[in-house]
Length: 111
Image (cartoon, rainbow, N blue to C red; front, side, top):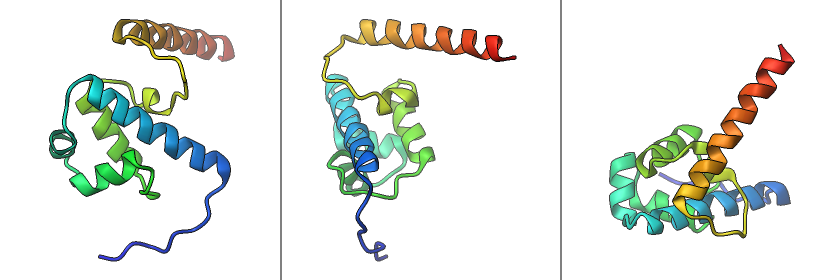
């Protein structure tokens, strides 16, 4: 199966792909999961996971990211958070919980 030709992506999309790939790799390593194990549990090929982590894969489906997030036991939103700050799992969990609470408040306010 041949891949579509590479096209120039807008800088914002390139940045997002970099963030997603970096976050997957960082969280995977933090949880001591190999690429092969994550790929198998997420039902994707090791090649695809390697390409996502190294930002070479440009056709990432949300269902793929959702499967990866589920295996890593994180919210899919965490894959898109761009940060240079290294957070512990408990700090990240608290931050996400606060974010979810804030989202609920905003939704109620907008009704």
